[in-house]
Image (cartoon, rainbow, N blue to C red):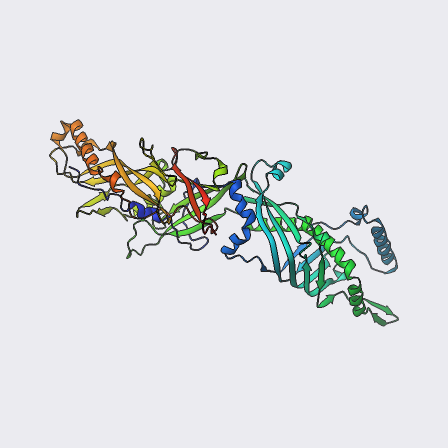
Length: 568
């Protein structure tokens, strides 16, 4: 009745391998997005975060980020509010008193002279740095979250320790936007060196991340900790920039000697550097977070998506149709027992914009974690079956694997895209940590050559397969295990007149053929060609499977460890 079809799912893994997407433009054109919420979930345990504490510089280096030297474009910062001298009277009473006396005297004796409350602008030109890092880390901070009363989102911190830092810029200028006649002061070709072996520069920049009600990421830089006021600092410059001052007596002008100002500046350099250190420390604690937050508002104005091209499953070499588009969207970030990141996902066909995902193809609830304690693995990763099934659907709708050539020369016609889902593991079947069981729902057309059935029939049934890691750890593959004959489904319209009289026996006959067909699968260990590109590398870090399971709600859940050899 049913002809042999042990190669029934040869194209299935062709679909799976398409998850190995080719990175393209950051935002390729996409006509419509059918977002699958929380399709990919990632959590980094406390054990896993230790790698970012101790080896962040190496991780970033592998991604092409240079930490020992860098370049910054020009930037400027204008104080949001004018400076009120009275705000500084408590700590600098004498200086504020003298300032007011001088201002009042000039206002009284110079006709037309007046000073508004100062509102400085600081402009730093194109800059670069050279640094000798002894520590560069990214850490989570639950204690600070609790202290600040944050119940959602996550607080992370970048911690730096630099034995020696040299910062150079082509110019530093300061002027008063409320009193522009005062001109600009500053210097050109400025070089600032800080820190040494005994007293390294230490900076801690904590920041708070959360998703708002609109699904957009919010960034808030918190107070920066630093030891700028206690480390050695040296300053060099090529040219001092000062306003032009002159005194006119009966039409004769006497200009201020700027070279004497320069000489005075050099003589007062130690005191000036002390002031510079204090002001840099205050700037880092107060103005720097404000600058970062303002920049974040400009950049984080919408959804954070990464969109890529994807080769469709079963695509022939001469197929010139455009590739699929698939994307990931940041949906949530949180910090509790672990750092948790939730990503929505979508896959679309640009030439089939009317295609919509089938609700029944996705998971049936939240992912089930907790198979093993968090202290026993580094990273948890879950993938909703709906994403895999959506990709299969789009490819099937292109008819990429509508017909399958069999080893005996026959052809099977797929009537629907295969669907991957959870199945209870067979009784007394031992499993390794890097393998789990799944089922594949298939629908095929067959020519049974039976008087009880019509010439062509369509039968649906489940194939039980083992999903396991390949020996070379290049991915995961499906290994045929059995067919579940009790899942057989066939419309009554496929019975002939004779078959309608013996429906029960005919169905049992089909089941027997299915059992016969898969009888040798358990012993053959026959893998379907192709592989899942899992586990992925995360930030260039190679991962080993600790445990993998398809949970009852339809999530492929992986408990991962950093690779013991060659993780970075």
